Length: 136
Image (cartoon, rainbow, N blue to C red; front, side, top):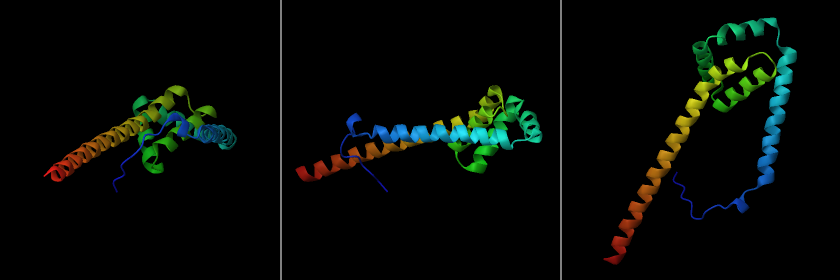
């Protein structure tokens, strides 16, 4: 499906109250997820997290596995934030676990930008052909 924007969106068109409300809801969820993890997590979970994320390479591998399992880099990052907030994971461990998710997110963004640029180029070429046909 090809979607072509016909008009520019201005800052006045953006519903800022909805964006701020969504962000507040996100932070609310992170807070309660961290609190819930703190209450539920036992000593065994702490040991597993320390064991598998103390080495930076292992932390990256854990991040890869979590991202693959949940199919969302944002969810993997939110889970990691919750674990850090609950005191189950140190910030250094979280950095390794989240690094892969950010690489994937940047790759996705780069692919999207490249695709949009190609679509824009194709649209310009089609418009040039239409103009040539009209002038003949």
